[in-house]
Image 1 (cartoon, one colour):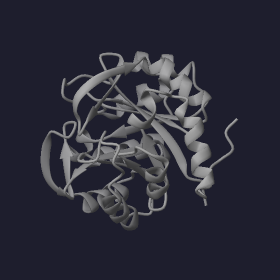
Image 2 (cartoon, rainbow, N blue to C red):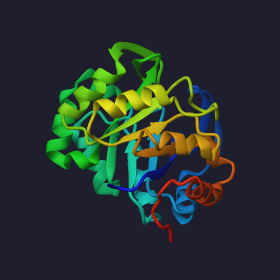
Image 3 (spheres, rainbow, N blue to C red):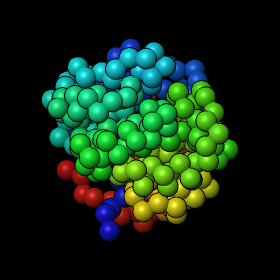
Length: 247
């Protein structure tokens, strides 16, 4: 069985990493290339870069940023935001991304997942799901869709997604812990890996998430001090979480 993964997430807006609480009150926390490199050096298993304004502003993801990030990293990374067509995803992978994450576009046209899986392989297709009270939200968590979170995760898998990035809107940025109930429900309903997202504030939160999910997304817990990832890995090992040896 693959070892659990620790995946720092960098939400990007206007070329900078930002972080908020419950998807609101975004603040600048640094340069995406420099932060990405710091996390790579500190032992991240993967990285996720999400252009949080691309869909709201109806523009493409930042291919130039992906190119600069790829030149600095030696670990896999996923890019999401503004991917609406197969060509969008293909450009990002050609620029150096390893996976693409799709959210609103897949909800509006679920067949996009099948197209991307056929073009790139399911292993490169991540469906991002923003959830609140068991329901799916689109457009960076601003629009309710009326879709059930677990049912959408099942459908996304059937259409070709190779991984689920599940973010609890209510837990996002709070540092009060992940939403283990919805994370466990989704993980139990699909056979593909689930990345728990939203709410990490301590090693115990991450350890709890990794009991029900295959990976944990990390943001607020790290951004003020990227080297926190090194100590977090050590703390998790002491709590019995098996992790890969980071060089």
